[in-house]
Length: 337
Image (cartoon, rainbow, N blue to C red; front, top):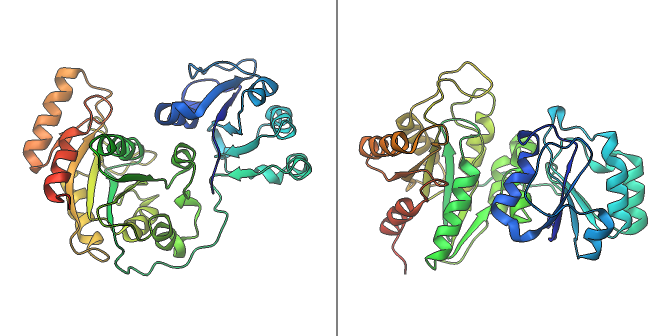
């Protein structure tokens, strides 16, 4: 799917920042695409964007209303329907990362048809995929992998894209989750793909590329997570990465949503190499991205130093300290030209 900016970010009546994490992710990385925000009474989130109504946003050139909300069950709230209908009537497309399809509401489907607008259900692929083949593809690929879910794989890939482009490297973020698709404007929410076709979908996301071009593939889940390891493995095989970065949150003891103990960084490195060799025998780690948000700066630097020493790899917090050391290692491992 190809979603057109500028975006009007719709926050509805969310009770807190966490319930609008999709919107915050888009604004963090593509603020230049975000024209404004629209909030209903009772909304407790604020993206720091101008508050605009539908007519005002359309008049300023907004092309897509983005429902930047995460809720239990991914349901479409009845209170949002009038705003969605108004946006379609005003000439905007509508994009949503919810589980419920926009077009499943007959009012929305009819309005989109009547006004010739597109509905983007970001979690729902708009096409079918072949099974993965594992055939070597041209270009270079990096995958972010995790000790757990929600440890910073998307933010790490985006931080790498920014740093690499600033250095003149040819690098492109490849989205595999709904927020990533909204950030990049294209991609596939890989956890919504039928299991047999996950690796094939990733091959489609990251096809043959020119020599020296890097595809930075957004990771999902963890090979050690009992709920999501199937998605992670299919993603690893389809990405066929030349390099990977391990993402880790050091204050956790169990994996998110389950009582399974958190694996070590070393366990993740070893299993990623063992499984990844199936489609790329040369796969190798190039760094460790540590989410130190819960730590003081002193403690964060201590954790990063110890992690780097233990594994012989550069370790950094992509948001707090940047990914410069990891890109240094990447350039050393894969010289230009």
